[in-house]
Image 1 (tube, rainbow, N blue to C red):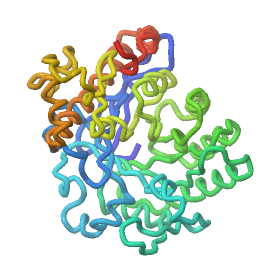
Image 2 (image 1 turned 180 degrees about the vertical axis):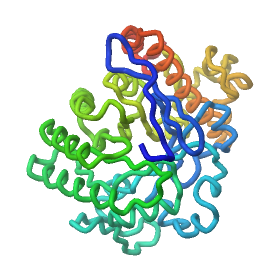
Image 3 (image 1 turned 45 degrees about the vertical axis):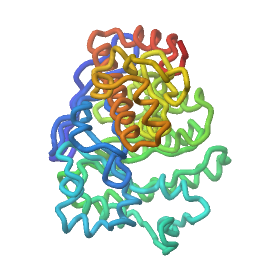
Length: 375
């Protein structure tokens, strides 16, 4: 790892590849496995930084693409970097913008030089190169930054996926050459679509280049769940055990629990915050769609086992009322709960690994159905 960020593997499970560790960053230590809430535009929607801290969040993900377009990375640099700009003094990771541009397929064109795209805000034309991706992330000042990658859609043929891998590897080399800040850790991204041969080839070549950590990208883009897990397990086996491993964008609770068993250390996803805004709330074993009439007079908290502010102070009936009345407070209280659910899940994961019983924990969690079973 670079001088600003270190990764220490602490304990390993006895029956799986799961492990706990610590990411030591210039903005504090992060316990792994870790889930990072997504702060797309320099904020986790509807939450103050203090609310994130109370929920137990140690690391947030920022979005390079969106911050580049608005307000602009040079403005953020001038104002002290993203930590200062968003009032977050804990660890930050920024992505390179590759996935966001991928999601704007009608507005972008991938070339060998970089990605040409039209802004979704005003239609202006831009070219993100590996060098610019590094410059933007340097201006933002995140603790961990990502290489620019070419993320192909699910279902591409082998030849297309192979071209994508070659392009991603070329860009990874250029990103490594362009990186300047020694305090920032740089992660390479393994692409390869649904082809194990390409995934292992990409992982091996990234290892030769040498990165501070390794991400598995191009998943959760429409492929069957079992295929996703097969790709994660296959790819993780080729990544250095001394480096952090990060699966990008996989965020359902059951997905996280299974991926941890393959030795994955880091996760991010919009699921907990997006679900909260739609009134879909995570609890231990029950799916709460809070707008349902069944909660109209329900005086119970969302989850009697949860210690979050929302569960300590409010009833399901009150939350339902807020959502039906379209009050903004509904979004805040729901998001507090969902984020805390995820932090508690990660705590339980780390505890079970520490006790050497992760396989048992995973089996129980999957059998229970995570939060998805109605009771």
